Length: 156
Image 1: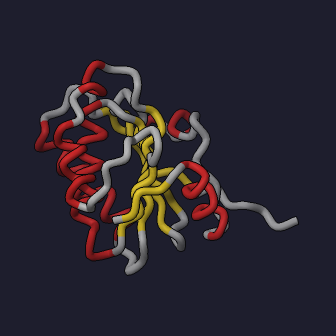
Image 2: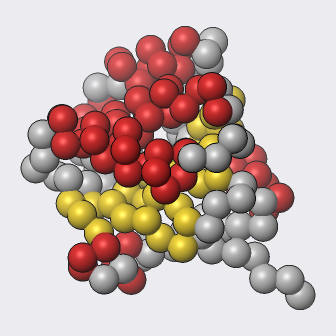
């Protein structure tokens, strides 16, 4: 897994012909197309991470990008031990502030799922995108998630 700066994430999306989802993208979905996990069990959260994200985003044999964009709201932001251990596994000692992007190859999807699970448990907003995907998985810091259309960069 590679850890990317925000500028590198933006460049990766640009090369894929995409942009980051708007902060209000979840609010544009009909209520029946989004779900809140704020008071859900760890098992329910794991189901969403391991099944719903994989079904919508990971079913491709290509790199996947997870970007954490909203993480300073809750006291859990101070309890980064598990997250830090994942980063150390990949010999990365940087911080989320420096490198909020997580670029995983197909054989690293389980690690990306672990990051998505921790983001949800800790109340961090994030999105997951793939190069060829028409959709992105988006979750806000309140635990609301949904599958949104992947914003395209329109040709001039």
